[in-house]
Every structure is written in C-alpha cells, then in structure tokens.
Length: 403
Image (tube, rainbow, N blue to C red):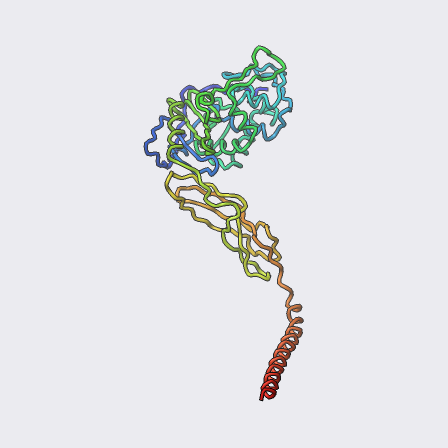
C-alpha cells in the first residue's frame, strides 16, 4: 500500500504561502507565532488575530480533522486493521504491525494523545481505501465547515509543500470538532491505557499537550511540529463557562504564546447572549391570508463575545422565502436572519412563524355571505329601533300616570 508512504522532505523549502491578513486589536498581547488567532468557541467571534489568513503548514494539527471524520464515520467499537506497509510511516508512531487490529476509539486516542502518524494512515485506508482518497474526504469536510484556504494531502500532517491551511480555517475546524462530545472527551484526556491485539508492552498513550496537567482550565486540543511548519498548537480552555479556542502556527515558543493568549482573552473579554431564544426579529408578508403579516422569531439564542464593559453593536437582516402564501403553520420556517457586526462576525439562523395564518376564503364565499350580513344588520337595526320606541312609550305612559 504505497499510498501510506511518506513523501520525501524537501529540506527547508517552506513555500511563500503567506497572504495579506487584517489584524485584530490585541493591546498588551505579544505573541511569537507568525500566525495566531483567538476565538470564542460559542459564537465564533474573533478576539485576537495575527496573520490569521496567511497560508501555513499545520503539521499534526491536521489530526483534528482526521479524528473528527473518524468519529463521524465509524462506531467506537469498529475494528480497523493496520495495512501491510504501516511500518514505513515515519516519526511519531503507535508502532502498529501489519494486520494489527484496534478499535476506532483506541485509534482516535492514539492520534490525539500520542499523535501517532501510523494510526492516521490506518484510519485513512479503513475509511477511504487509500491516503489520497482520504485526503479528498478531508478537503470536502473542510469546505463543509467553511474553510476557504485549506488543502490537505496527508491525514497526519507530515510535510508536503501542498499541505496547508490558515489559522482562521484551523479555528473553524477546531470549533466544529469541539461540538462532538466524544472528541471533547478525547482531547481532554492527559493519558490513557490503550487496548491492542499486538505489542502489549506499548499500551500507554500520553498527551503531548502539557497544559492538560499544568492548567485545570485547559481542555484540549492538539500540538504539532515539523521543521518547515515550526511549532504549532490549537488550544482550548474554559473558565466560568466561557470556552476560548486558540491557534498558534510557526511559533518559537508555543507554550509561552498559549499562556499569554489565554490569560489575555479571559482577562479582557466576556460572552453575552445578544438575542435570547424566541426573540422576535421582524415580520413576513403573507399572500392570500386572513392576516397580511406574521411575526417571526429565532429558536435559539445568539451568543456574542466582546470586551468587558462594552456593548454589542449588532445589525440584523431578514432573508425571507419569496411568495410566502397562506396557509402558514405556527412554527413554520419562513427564511433566515443574518446577524453581523462591523468586524466581520456573521451568524445566520433560521426564522419561524410565531402564529398560524389561515388562508383567506375564496371570493365567491365572501360574496355569498354578503346577503346574510345585510339581513343580519337590518334585523339588528330594527330590533334597536323597536326597543327605542318601546322605551319612549313606557316613559310617556309613566308620565301620564303621575299626572
């Protein structure tokens, strides 16, 4: 299975992948990384950015997406067989033997804790049949997540000049992965004793993310290093329910960068609920309905991260389905609403009808009802006139008796 072989390293040929990128204010924060990013995991708001759109090599941070795809496409107990040339995969290794069998769950831990390159190739072949086919799966999933400047060639991040991403794209991948409960559990594990069919002397998996033991607020995610990529790290920490994701690419000291970035983010920022669940966000016109419009609401809250002591400045725009015609059921999805600020943050959510709107009766039915309405009106009017006359009569008779 030659597809698992490591492409020869082109020594020190780090291509000029950098692209212009906007910077986001980080007063008091200095990082050594060439690219760095801090986002709020819940809202996706960018808290700090340094060359976040510059294309760079991600090294083993690639394994975040490889592991996510494994969790999405297999059951934890699925058996995965190591291919015949598994021992040709260099560098960090689980020391798999050809034909060795491990579960998908155990290989997920091996990829994220030990950063096992051979485990990634075994996973790639199991899911897609070959490494190139799995690379296509990686790129497809990356686009689904919203990545725009990513191209993966290997499942493990071993260097290839055409294997690259950006801090911005890598943050999107990490944010998507952290939505998966199994993934969160794996990356928050400092060490684990694995189960394997061969090599019973090599069972302990120890995470390369030392922050898991240094700082109890850290709960992930992945280290990475190759000589062309430099030191890379994607981190996660949660303090008082506020989870922040960091991305560090090409750093001289990723540990110092990570500590500085996390401390700065939690010191200066907070998360708020900008719009609560069931907030009304406008109205939609209805054709042929008994009502001309129907009020709209969102079904989930909108979170927003901002500097402490400041207020959000968020605009919203409705995108409604054209020609919305009655009847409309209460709770029916009728379009979306786009929330945005002036810093590039955008969130789009579906909007739903608050009330039901019935269809207006046909014209013939309305016309047919006119005689009944007229007759009814005449009868009511006649009754009122008679009552008025009777009242005058009784008042007159009463007056004569008193006289």
